[in-house]
Length: 339
Ligand code: PEP
Ligand code: MN
Image (cartoon, rainbow, N blue to C red; front, top):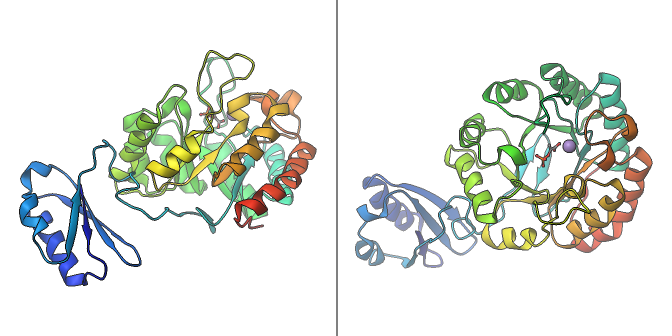
């Protein structure tokens, strides 16, 4: 439930309500707007006497939250969340471009891609060091060596960095080298991993599961936030449908739905959604046009020889062209693309 205080309620009134709740062993989360303060309550509500709360000074109303996710819920936290990644901020005022190879292959490969995506206007370089591949015989990633190259790429370009993690050990290693961790579609409901990501307190990009509903996705985010880590960004990367012309089907309607239901930033990944480089630009523009806070785009120096996801990777020229073509959409979105 949330307790909405009357406009201009003094701090002392807010604290009295919060302490009644905490005395019953429940947690409170304050959300202070310009006019109104909201007290979010997490825990066993049956221990609370809502009539007693309702008559306390400056309490306006008590609203039950029927959704199973609370901390992720916009009712709990009406202001949009801003997530700091290195010196960059993901949120409602900026448009964030994350770009880079599916997998880190060599130091030279990553460096050349990092330089190219920076030149074209990206703020975050991505690169997988632990790859959750469909086949156990496919390239599985360079692991810690790949993370070291990511740290080198940050040192040279100044770009913030993101890398997928698939285990607790990978989270520990990633914390030493990169600015943000990614939980991939296949691990969206790996609840132990979500909890570990929460305990790490690192910014987390949580991709939507291959067949996850928006409710399941928001509950997955709740696992991370419930461990005390509010730095979560969602990523729509396509869901599995009966259509086979594209690798997945990009569910762009998830963007306005998430905006309504949650305060977390959401970005769109047209690369994994389509699996085809030629379709990426159209959906990247659509993602910005429909209100996404950013994009994740796979870029490779030599897509034909990429060890992973070559067919959907853009060349440097294609990525540069896309960034120029995105300019009018970014302008219309009234967001800042920080270079
Ligand atoms: C990736 O980002 O390279 C990746 C594996 O993405 P997803 O989890 O969305 O398939
Ligand atoms: Mn990939």
